[in-house]
Figure 1: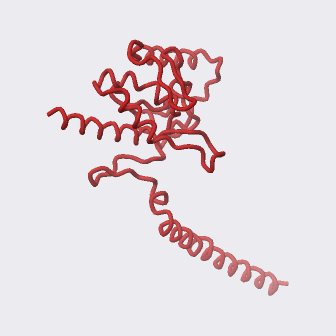
Figure 2: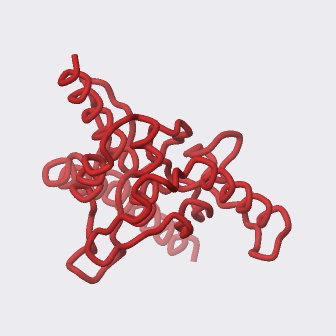
Length: 215
């Protein structure tokens, strides 16, 4: 009886060591190697570099509040927006007073900065916006609080503000938006979207070109 118990324990320990070795070392090494070989950018966090310096990731949003830049989706993370160590939503329902007040404040901010007398209607294919229609993704946070993208609709809505404050022709900014739209994967998965950090990097390049042309 005791000999059988020891035999079972020995087999169990051997299996534990064997599976620990394969699932804890060999399998992760194989998966990591394949990822680094075929998908190095995604495997390393989809990082964005500029002038040899990492400035962000395509997967995590950044907070922009200057009217000269595109604004991303609101973030409910604490103690600051887009805190990747504290990914969360507000968990407030649509009838909650605090939620309604927060959304109302965001709407007021957008309306205050939206210049209605400059190109009140912009179109891009089936997209058409007017100054009184506010994109929902500019006033509500995502469940993660880290959403790095906005809808093309939300980007088009902000062109008037950026063009007016930055003194850049709205058509040139619109061209940037159209260029950076990512459409549905395989034509059916997901929704059209634009990465806000990529948008603002392209916007900085446009400012740099405009400054050189005017100097």
